[in-house]
Image 1 (cartoon, rainbow, N blue to C red):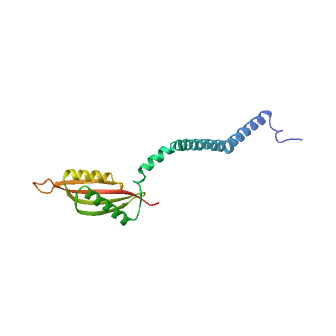
Image 2 (image 1 turned 90 degrees about the horizontal axis):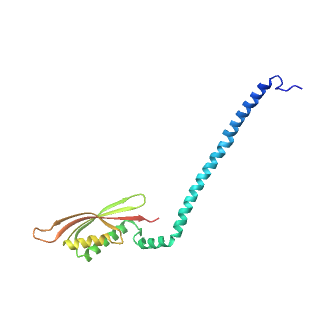
Image 3 (image 1 turned 120 degrees about the vertical axis):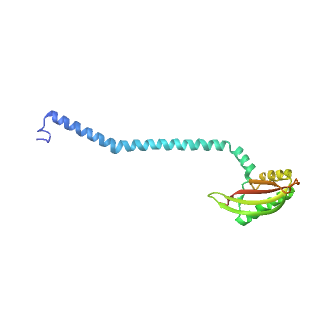
Length: 181
């Protein structure tokens, strides 16, 4: 019985089998082993990422009490915002109350509008007032320490009269608030 390889020499059969096994090995590597090794490497990277997250979460969990204590200290400052008009009214009331406590006379107070950003709102108010320098300083200090997170962005002071120790001030006050989730 004659086979397909019987008419070839021993050397030609060897070269054919060698070439076929190299091509078969390359195909096995490209089609099977390389994708498996790539997936194995990706699993290793994913495992490293999960381990890093787990380590970070374990550290946070170990510091849970300290984090909650720090959060509770500032929780009252980050109150969820209500509606735009309600919040504007609350800001104006806070400014007026602070001014009266510091003996600062408000001559004009104008809301300048609200800017909506992705995760917060910025309210701006212009206040024109009159007071002595020490009263203005206390007013600004009390505004900045307010639980409403008020910030004086701009202050322009001028003398009310040439012989007076009373100053006329224009303040731009802003508040950052976080919309209800």
